[in-house]
Image (tube, rainbow, N blue to C red; front, side):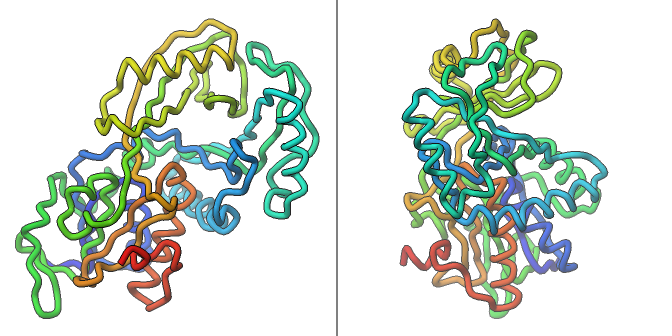
Length: 346
């Protein structure tokens, strides 16, 4: 068997790169073993503003210009909705919060996203004594639904194998690679924090941050926007809401924990004041990098081996951009953005 590419991992990064190959009519095979779940349990929110500091997300405008049409194409491809657009309402905690918001609305990179008019309307069941700030051009991609659809599509096309990839079995030939009898030009690793077990790329400084979320049923809460306070409350429909997320730098497992649930419960007490029932709890480990930029590019000694990783908490926004940039680098010789290129760690 001969393919142009092998992709290891089918989270958002692997999916986005696979779709670049589909569009270019390149042959490929995906290996997925379900060991990494960050894309499957992610909130999936895309938001161009860092609301903790009222600052713009890195390259937010450029990322959204690629990401939104990308998800729209996938919706047409699978005849289903993945992208739900909504307004984010930031709950202010003080007059100082309000003043910082007003200052931010004048910044050139934020003027398209932050509404200068404070929303003082009371929201039933929501703490908001100092009003709310509206963030426009935000939304949520149902990442689990998207990945599930894409897996089914690849199964039908016979382009995916559900098994663990064994790095030590990669054989280097003169002009190609071989893995278990499969010949290929390149292998692209999109393994999330599983990169720690990758003997070729584990020298890169990837950190793991566990995040936990709960799904609640709150029949007396009726909001059609994402509420952002000490955590987020994301409407799913029919009075179901996803609530998150935690940041745990010590626990590297993907198992939901009592500590995580209790942390979310304690924070939620300060955000809503209506009764609710916890329906579900999920956890995943996010791959992050110390400089908060992705890891993309060929291996310094083995250029046929390539990495696409480190998308962090904003994978929905950044994955399509990074996949396109990496594809254009490999196939067209275009330069990688130096702040994302793994050469910065050589």
